[in-house]
Image (tube, rainbow, N blue to C red; front, side, top):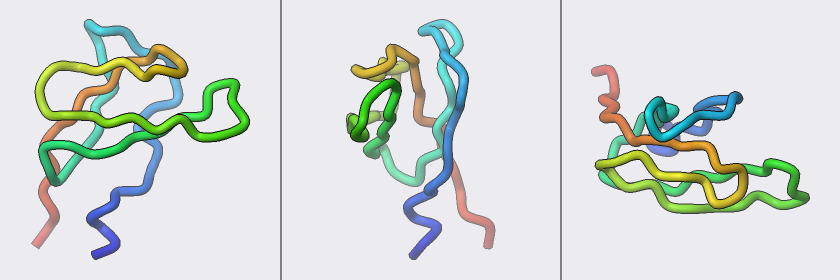
Length: 70
């Protein structure tokens, strides 16, 4: 059950739409968050498909399929 959440940092550098940071996901959508120059985490949804921009820092992220080891 704990592996479902994949709680680790996806990337620490700014990214662009052409080279988004890959975010491994078990589902077609998941929430992501960042705290770029904020005192609180800014949460947003990532959906499978095109890269999406973080509303806080402007970095781009893209969901990639992730399978659990058996």
